[in-house]
Amino acid sequence: MTLDARERLIVALDLPTVHDAEQMVSRLGESVVFYKIGYQLAFAGGLPFAAGLIAAGKQVFLDLKLHDIGNTVQKGVESVAQIGATFLTVHAFPQTMKAAVEGKKGSKLRILAVTVLTSYDDADLAAAGYDMSVPELAAARAAQARDMGIDGLVCSAEEARKLRDIAGPGMVLVTPGIRPAGAATGDQKRIMTPARAIEAGADYLVVGRPVVEAKDPKAAADNIVAEIEQASGR
Ligand code: C5P
Image (tube, rainbow, N blue to C red):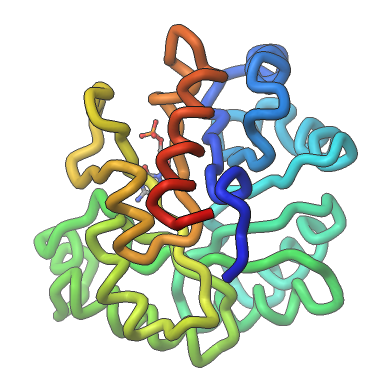
């Protein structure tokens, strides 16, 4: 993959209003070219805002984690594809993934599958009726995602090496839980520095608070890009 270091940093706009997001994007300027929009902002005017970002030349990852009956997912993905986003997340259930692959046809949208939410442990899976451990289910779903033509996986940097073996070179791995050395960990438990995540095989790093809550967000982003550049050799 020949990605420029700057394209590999995705800043999570986990902010309450479009106004806050606009201010952050303007402070970050040319330092950030890729943004993630999740539930909080998406349901507060973030989808028209996403279209504006794309029109301004940025790339957008819509972290909407879709999961519904196939027909509904397919139609929803067709609508998301018209916004012009680069990435959209769905839960890694076979029907959902199949419908999402169908829905994005003919667009440049790429579908990322969330294998098992990182807040789930084996007890949560048992309570939900699964007779499998988290690593077993994550590996099985990653293989299904690959076989169904899903474009990539969201995973922790710790899982990246193992999932790369399953996914092969063609799928993108997108990893949150990134903390530059010295940054506050917040509620993230499984964290890695940008350089270590790149070395583990991540293609894209999702970073939220270490950038948006930094005193100087632009400098924080530039430092992460420099670290990616150093770790990847470009
Ligand atoms: O602020 P922080 O860097 O922890 O933000 C990480 C972003 O990645 C948040 O938007 C969070 O919802 C998302 N995410 C995560 N862990 C996952 C999946 C998504 O932290 N397993």
